Length: 286
Ligand SMILES: Nc1nc2c(c(=O)[nH]1)N[C@@H](CN(C=O)c1ccc(C(=O)N[C@@H](CCC(=O)O)C(=O)O)cc1)CN2
Image (tube, rainbow, N blue to C red; front, side, top):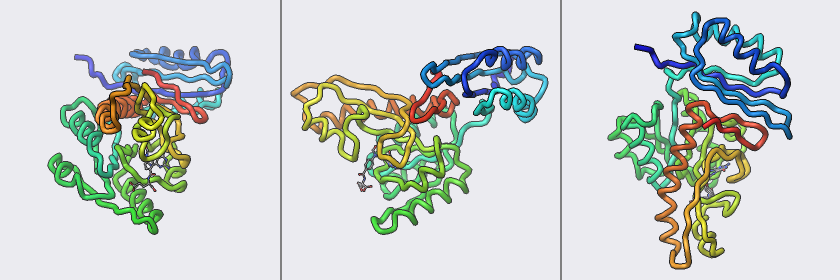
């Protein structure tokens, strides 16, 4: 029975000739079995992006030696690169405030085995979801964010994340604006679900803004968090048609389903190393 463990190689570098050949030659010379391969050349940016999944058991060496052997090619082509192990689940720390629909959804997908991650903790600025989270045998940390002590609160969250050896923080309707310090400390490691079709309706009350504007489409956006509010690189989006008969409460209700779907999809892309960042945009190898 073939062991389905894969090494996932993701890279970007200045575009040029011979990149695919060089990478594939290293794998082929070691009789490696490529399960999935995608690449993209951004002609405007003159940058090349690539993702390969290689069957771990097909290679005669472990991941550390694979990284050592790949480093030579990476230097030759000035690559930003990473090799991850599909058998090593990402450690996802979830942050939530008072709206629990995305938290419930992620916990359900995790409990059913659909979302293969480790959840070392849930952090909240309220006590609302302690019993739900602890029922899942997941530690719950209540970190209040008083207006005059926001930086101290975010230092506590950063210390918790480091102590828990988190790989990614998911803001699952966490309604506090993170400081520049914590955003800069974890670039590409904090994912938010914003309840609008960005760039429309930034802020805490997008459904109210959508209703007031009279739009015919609403949506949700999963993006990486930067200091600039709701302005980080977009990972995934979706929309839904609405009309004049829909009140703000209807938009909030419809929106919850879109938010859950878009966040789960965006998080899956991230934990499967399918997202590469370039400037303020993403390449997503779906
Ligand atoms: N630095 C960033 N922090 C956060 C981002 C982000 O993109 N960059 N996204 C938000 C989530 N969000 C919308 O998706 C959002 C959350 C909160 C607010 C807001 O105005 N909050 C007020 C307090 C509101 C309250 O207490 O209920 C505030 O912080 O003063 C706007 C947008 C998460 N953080």
